[in-house]
Image (tube, rainbow, N blue to C red; front, side, top):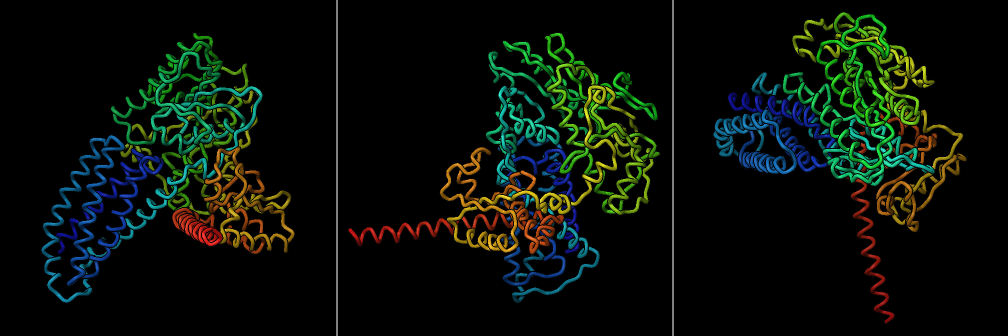
Length: 627
């Protein structure tokens, strides 16, 4: 049995690596709507392994229970085989991932060879569970079981979240412009791009998104953006006023091997060259090309204050940015205004560099990297999006532009300020040689910096909302509960609630809140939408969409739905503010989303369907009787 447990432990370890490296870091399945079927299978398999790992760590499954265990193993095999089929249908597996899958399959065969005789022996005993203890192996299996159970819950949350398009969960209201711009955006599904596209749509522009994965574009933006797979799909007579090019392989997606460096360069340069070809053949050329770049253009600069006239160096990051900017600069010869945004570390919630830098510090494991004296040039995501819009609208802005906050900080200063905000100690240091030994050239992102300032942006009159790190951290480090309640608990504006008044359960729940609102003289307006075909149609939402979810205009003017909509109501009612705070606690919010979308919505849909069929039968009987 010990050999079987060791093999199970190897299976768990290799499986964890496969999940983390391939599914999360390189393939990013949790952000791909078309990976939902694969993630469903992963969830089932992970729940099975959680039961098996913990079950065999402490119990002998005897008699009939031995056959139950065999059934669980058989289901795992079937789920894995079906997973292979789904993977081949939906994505191209990297070679290394196929090797890992082969190792897992061979190891599972070895597990069966050593484990089946034990199970067969158990099957001859009286049915029941007998406590066993394999020492350290039992505890290792328990740790694996708890870990895989936690991952199963995470995958379940992702599956549920991907079941509803983001533009329906967090609706977008297109603005109205007398002369909207037609803007082609690449990299629109990335951390910066998705926020930028929403901002462009909300101000009234018409957006065309170039994306390899149109399912992801549809998931994020729905009817609010046109999605294309190839630039060749754009006819020569198409009017495009501006191009914003943010496409590129993520810098933090893996070690900088020779192959990965080539991919990082080609993903940027090839896309930019394709855009040049498009702009040449258009009958009417765009007015402006806003092209992404990075402060890595300047190389390693120590304490030197770097402005836009700084020169590049002969290192990979500089060469990457230079080649990208040179490819974009050719648009200048076409009479197109070219703006090259040299972007620093982008700090925002839900992605980018900040969560990865903040997480260790929040856990009390924060460390100063290298000497700590290297500079970090950063920018708040909101300011970056505002700067892109500023450059888009200003005809006099061109050339390189540093997209960084005016007050860069050292790594040690950043870590200390972050630790103070998180109320955690800063105890550790990671020497540069350790990081370089582990990460190679990738370590330059952490131990080599640039002290970059946005001279041109400020010279043109751009005002940063978050110029200092202290201000930005105050915004970024607030818990979701604090941030939401700061908005939701305002009393000087009205909260609008849209609900299905034809649903008895919904009407009963909302009726209770109506009474509380009247009792406390609260600014909450309730709107039943069962007879309103056009409720929230401006957001692209159909009546069916609105009937399936609770939607609320919070006092900040945003339309939120589901759990966030419930929290918006609770936050305005003093009696229920504790519930709004509870909902936005880490993990609790994700669990509530699963319960709302996977349980409550489905139960209510089934309930209303049954009630509807019942009413139809009763009405039919009455009509027959009168007839």
